[in-house]
Each structure stands twice: as structure tokens, then as C-alpha cells.
Image 1 (cartoon, one colour):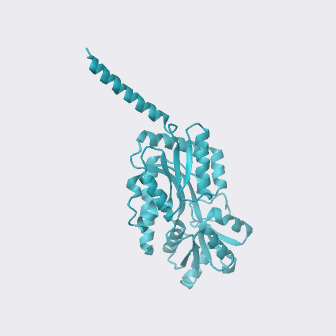
Image 2 (tube, rainbow, N blue to C red):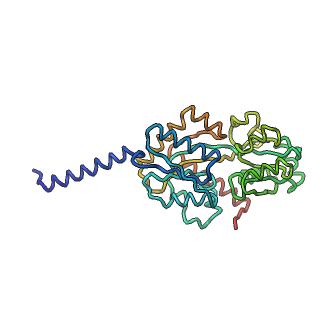
Image 3 (spheres, rainbow, N blue to C red):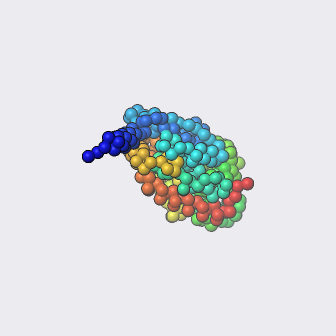
Length: 325
């Protein structure tokens, strides 16, 4: 027969268990969830994340807030989330550079994304577009490679900065084809596009969404895109593989990751809610209009993807001997 003290302990234990289960069931609606982006407002990644937050909120899953925290190549936002409480209410919109490139370029970050962050889901991806100025006379990747091999170092290509995913896409292409071109890093894409359009730089490995208006107007020439399939925005432009260089792929992407220690049931629930939005046809079309492809994943698949991407870009960085002062 239970004593009154034991009954009290059992009651307290059951009460705590019920409260824990209720909290798990309420997540993520129990308090606002903050998506931290390493970009300023505007741009395709910001727009996709805002639409995702709006969808989750309109479906009654809670309040979702966007916090833009640009700076230090994404390291400021990433560090903030690494140090946040792992309660599922501070989530990083993790990008290619911050998660798989910067750990090799910045040895003193104070954290390691692969051990200090927990994957939730992939969100979207986009290829880089390789463009040429009209003045260069280049109309295909074959032209580019032939000229680069005939006159090593004569061609220059613009990127949105040293050590960015676009820069590394160019370095990977150089390594795959055995050519040498000079990278001209810009502080962002607009200046690079302006100089390519003006014929002051031969080529660019650039953001597809940003370059699209100048491609469509004919001011610059799209030679290829760097994904495994042609993007809907440029259906008549070949991929690098289709243009004669199989095995080449370089994608930019955005994902959701959380501080290490987030509860498994919360990870699974948020991942499921996010993937349901990503699978919606209207959301897919809207994301495609922003120059990206909505792509979801399980947390486990995202973990494997991050490991593979880290290995890939680490090899490119070391092969090109890229160092940041």
C-alpha cells in the first residue's frame, strides 16, 4: 500500500512528465522562434526564409521572427546561434560559406559547425551562373577553356569576394579543367556585374538571381550554370557538365541548423513542419521565381550533406592555397 509521501512523489513525477510532454507537443508554438540570417534584408535567401516563416505562422505553428545579422562573412550570425540556448527558439539560416567554407578559411572561429550545430533541414539551393562580357567574344565554355589554355592568366573573372562560394566555384572549375584565370574579388555582386557589362572584366562566377536581368537584356552572355540540372530561369543555358565537363557541380544553398543540444523531438517536429511547406507546389513556384529551388531533407540527410560539402570545399581551398589575412 502506497504511503501518502510516496503518493505525493508519484503525483509530482506524473505532473512533471505531463508538463514535459505538453511542452513538446506545444513546440514551436510555446514561444516565438527566431530565424537568424547572415544577410541584410533583401535577396533571394532572405525572401525565401521570410515566406517560409509566414507560411509556418499562417498555419498556426507559432510566431516566427526574422533577424538579419550580416557581417564577418556569416560568422557573426553563426556564432550568435552557436552560443544561444538550445531550446529550439533560435535557429540559424545556415549557408554554404558559413557552414562549410569558413571553418577552413578562419581557423580561430571559436566553434566548429559540424559539432556545435544541429541540422534541421535543407531549405533551398541555386547554381552559380558563369557569364561573359560581350567584349570578350566568348560564347561557350569550350571557347573559355581553349583561350585560357592558349594564354594562361590573360582571362580574368569577377566574384563577390575572396573565399565566397562563387569564388570557390571558379577555383573548382580551374582545377577540373587545368586552366589558370585571375580572380578579381568585388565587395558584392553589383560592382562585378557593372564591370562585366562594361567590358572591363572578361567573366564572372555570380549569383543567378542578380545576374538574370543583364542576361535577359543581352548585356552579358550566360555560358553555363553550375548545378546538375538547368534552372527554370535559364532553360536554354547548359550546365557545366552538359557543356563538356562532367563531374563538375557547385551549388549555393540555405538550410536550417540549431544550437547543439536541441531536443530530438523538437528537431523532428520543426523539420517535419518545414518540409511540409517546402513540398507545397505554390511555395516551390514562388521559390523558383526567386532564383532558387525549394529542397527539403531529413536532419540525418542534412548531416551527411554537410560532411560531404565540407570535404569538397576543403580540398578546393587547399588545392588553390586560398588564405585570408
